[in-house]
Length: 603
Image (cartoon, rainbow, N blue to C red; front, side):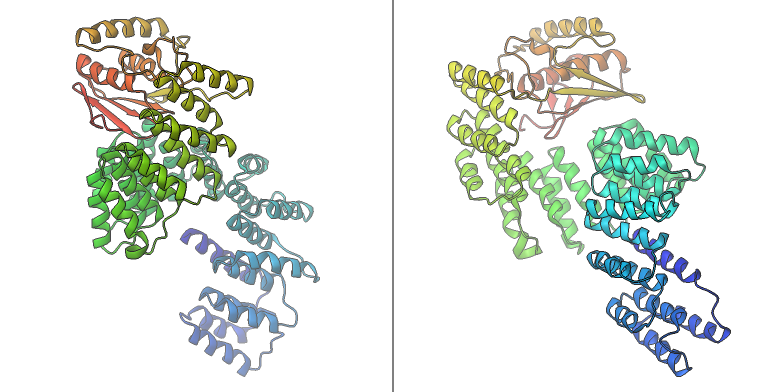
């Protein structure tokens, strides 16, 4: 935000510099105005202007006064002076519009533009750029497209400032392809353009493309990446679990001297945490002298994902003692920590303290965390009662709530609750495939095979297809993706041979594959008769054991929940091969070592 404000003020300065040279009599007063640090001194200079014989029709002087008030966030005084100007020019209009953007009233900027079009004043590149920024802040895609069309008609379709703002606007409005279209049409790009394009991809879940643009930037531009670009790149690495690229970006942060930037350090903490390197996250966090709420939240979320609930609570308490106010995301993090560590009373305490002690209104996502806390300790009736009492307006949050309860009810054999949860999901058209699959498994787990079969048949007739699960490992700078039962990848025969060998050695240690209740539809779209040893995470593990040298921790990422049977297999294999494995599934991290898991089988 600070970057945006500074850029806006630079735009205003550029606008003022475009005016015709002022008479020498103005220069002294203008210099006084630039040195003003409070509204009283600006008002004093304002009076001096008119005492010196200047009138309100002196647009040049009045524009400097307008800018002086805006610089001190006195937008109402700036607008009053603007209204008194007989003939405001494009600089006058643009300065006031930019003032509304910087003061958090972007909606008024668009209203001013409508009024401006009714006059003879024509917008320039700074005007259009300011309007695009307003659309970006408001996430007004349709309005932004109209401004884009105006820019094309007025001859600013290739202007660097306007196009850079358009790339940012399309990205903020989730139209990444629109952003890329503008980006590709530009003959010249600056650091702002490149940063906006990378951020657009990173913020919209297209991390691979963000990294590709970053590589293009490094090959084409001699300028070093700034902190905003690096934060977006690290965020992309975080979402993809790309540790190698993340470490390379960390090196760029160090070389560029950006380690003191709050946004960069928080993304580094998050990236290492999501890449299975919580120790690195912790080291970076401990080097921060005065962590902000963003950095505290990142490390609390990381600790929670690793099942370190007590540590997340300690960090929360330390943050509050230091006077750092937690936000809604901080509470989600600490509640997750309580959930993954079975800390029921502590979790309820945090929920009840949110509004009273910290002034944060509990939302559906916080109550969903508490539902999850109840579910993980087997208190399904309490979870069900709470879920029914929660008012959810956002369909996505509703899906998370009832999806949590549905999965837990299947695991605990509560078909009655599973029926209601799946019905709510199907009726709301959210997670429909998952609802069918999990309810089918719930019936199957209680021996109701006929009902389970009917549900699967109904699912097929309705054309509902569940997204396939997959796992992947990163080796050097390449990512290898695996799907259940698919051995068509490089060294597939070697992988199958190793899995068969490990299966035999596991049985010698008492492992009974498939005896834990194979979830054949909940976690991946696999038929019951499918061989458990060909689940995607096992394929990824076997491939990594073959390719990655001994002594290096193997990290496997999975897009769905790890099944119980694979969890037991990974524990046993870690003892056999004497290596560490870290698995990131949709819920949390599992660190397997010497035949055990960091989750202590509570997940």
